[in-house]
Image (cartoon, rainbow, N blue to C red; front, side, top):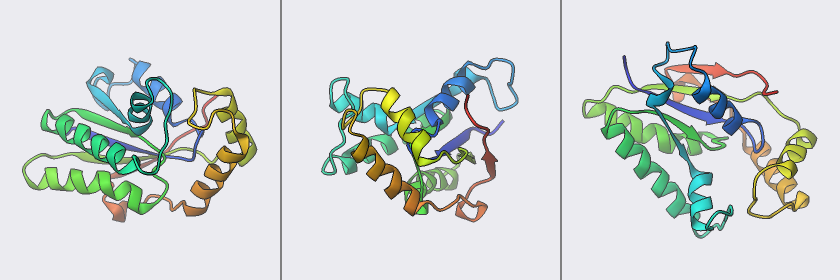
Length: 176
């Protein structure tokens, strides 16, 4: 079975991480490979690491965060691990980093099957309510800042397409 790369796509607080947790815990569905064979690459986890347990978002650190994420993915690919990328990936350029690395690995003999997993649309109000109830955040509970981020992400959204290099596109269900 080909190793898989699942690239999550969805705005902040749309349920990406919750979907991943549910997916990893569901032992009944094994057609995608055993759940324990999947590894998650999360840029938020790297940001938490930088902040000693608090999400630190600093524009000057983002190139480092992205580089670390890509290097983790390459190390996992060298071991033929199934990978899930937990990040918003709202536009082609954000997804292209992950797909470019995968295409390079495929050219040198790996054979990754790429999947775009698109979260259902969550409106601004619901998304912000989820964010305010959620984790330790880079800007704490600053609703205005998160509203700005949600709007910026919503404005740049481009739906993933097969032409980007995806073998499959999944449209996921709402998380309850």
